[in-house]
Image (cartoon, rainbow, N blue to C red; front, top):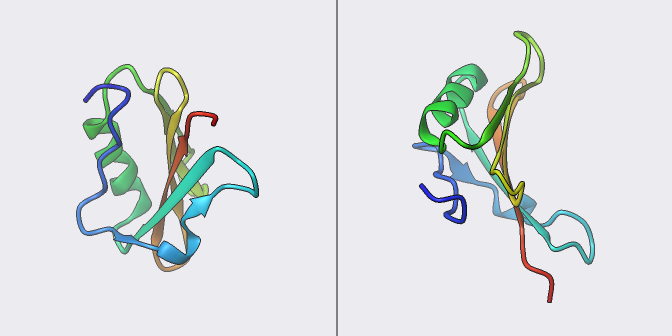
Length: 99
């Protein structure tokens, strides 16, 4: 997958449209949030296997809330996997071009 392609969505994850949009007012960064009942460690491992090898990978320590953060080489796309009490959150941060 080229760096400019959108990262894949974890199978079965559902989009949280209420949480998706600009990261902050006036920001060019857009956030998309997804949720799954699958364990965060398994979700992070899936992204590790399905994202291009040139993406950086930062894996959290066992028991930590943030399980994995993956960034494209130009850091315009970031995928964060976070463990919650009852589900796993997947956040895509996409840096849109400035207008």
